[in-house]
Image 1: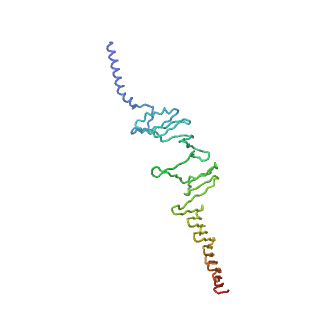
Image 2: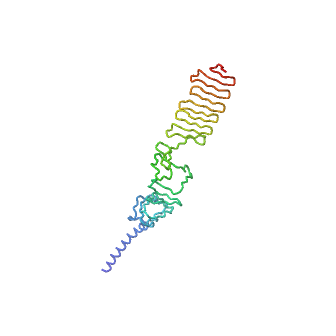
Image 3: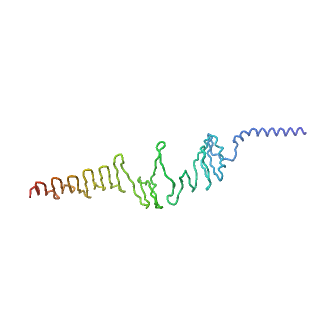
Length: 282
């Protein structure tokens, strides 16, 4: 009887040991279905997992990094916690700081709702093209601000009309428009309604009122126009007034001429005499 009981216990022990031995490799390799991680997807040793860190960064199991290619989706710490993200082996997709700031060297990046309602940078912005097309500042349409509440600076934006705009510290908006450039020695200032402009080159200054040139100053003459087209011309050798149809007054090195409105009568004075309607009177 005693021998029979020992034989039964021995068989039970051998059976139990064989089951444990079969599962032991899975337990060692971590392949058992343990509820410690909610694995969203597993492919090529890359884990996409959402973690919420409460107090201690050590609770984040870095032993998962078996291939130096572990990517974690969202790191959501609680507020007022501090974490050191110094490992180059981890790629953080989203980092939530709440109302806190990000410190980079001596600069601070933070969020403001008082005036600027956006990202504030306590430092300078340096744009540099390191590889390819980069080092640019992009302004998208419709980014105009409402006001400059703090009254201590200006704003630059790109409005819905594809205009580059500037707002000074008094919340007065101005339109910035530059046409031409240094390469062609031309620059133009245009009115807000784009009808009037002032063109300045190395040799000319021209003001256009939307209908005609009103001022035309070149290296050889100066012309001033009235709204209906009359103009006065000045150059090195003459003074001339034209009513838009004919010269009414002309003074040059040879003499002077005065004409009637219809051109039928004239008075000419030169070194030879005085002539009225072609006949000498003096």
